Length: 229
Image 1 (cartoon, rainbow, N blue to C red):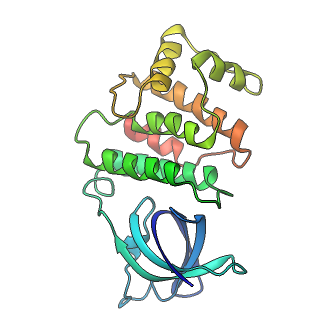
Image 2: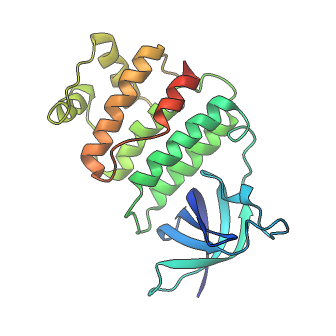
C-alpha cells in the first residue's frame, strides 16, 4: 500500500554495486529503512545528494507490515537547504546531529508528529539562520529531550543524573549556561566560550547515553570541536 509522508534522512549505507539502504525518520511511521536501487549510477533518476543526512523530503512510500525494508515510489526535497550542506561550520554540526539522531531515533518506530515537527522546524530554522548559530546543536539536543520523555527540570538534576555514571565537574559559570540551555528554546541566543561548549556537549552526550542505552562513541564530535575552535 502507498502512503504519503514527510521524511528526514538520517543515514545511508551502500548495498550491492549501485544501490543504498537509507534510514529515514518519517512523520507517519517513525524510523524506517528504504532501499533505493541504481542510485549510484551516473544516470540515476534520483541523485545521491537527495539522500545526504538531514535532507527534508516529501515521500510516497510502500509500507508492508511484514517487511523491514520498503521502497520509495516518489521523492521530492522539500524544502531544499540553502546553507547546511555548503557552510563548513553548519555542515560539521549537521554531520554531528545526524550521527546523534541515528542513535537516538533507533527503535522509534511509532508515529510521533510533535517530535517530527520539532526536528523539521529546527533544521529549517538552523538552515535559515545567518549568524549566532554555533550553539545550535546544544540547544537542539537539550530541547529534543522533552519529546523523548526525559527532559531535566533544571541543570542540577541533569548533572546529578550524569554524575551517577560519569565523573563530571562543572564550574558555576558552566552550570549557569546549562541552565540557560534548558530554560530557553532554540531561538534564544545563549553565548558560550569554546571551553564551555566542549564541557556542556560532553555532559549532554552522557545524559543521552544514560537514557538511550544505544550508543557510546560519537565519531564526528572530535571534528566538530576542531571546526568550532
